[in-house]
Length: 196
Image (cartoon, rainbow, N blue to C red; front, side, top):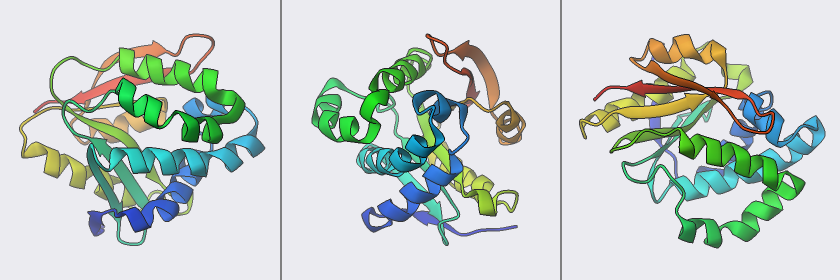
């Protein structure tokens, strides 16, 4: 199936954040950060809204025409959250995370520690509404970002805590470059890189 993908605008923030919260409801990383399902469901839309807002100025945000899937990308040199950004977003993040701050920092620090050196596009977040999965929306949103990143002739990097996603990403040209766990009882992740 062919699905139209467009740039996601500031006005799409609430819709995309709500969709990503549904898409990540059972994600191992999010289950580690928010072990209680009710807390997870309540806090994730706000968290994804902040991530959506933050990724706009440092990369690209793409979504399918009906909002079924979205991808958030960070441009080369922007994969890591700088200290100024961290300070600027500290209060909103505290409101979004509540008592999960420590677990969220463990996940974020582990993710940053396993990113490759050099310049690369970073597929920060990719999600598809559970009601629309298996219909090609997620693949369309990822492929559109890869196509744009390909112009820079740089590799594309991502990590996933879902073993079932590995084959999907391998089909798009990614290869596993590492397997690791978040310290303190956190989930397993796979690092994947798509060559330039």
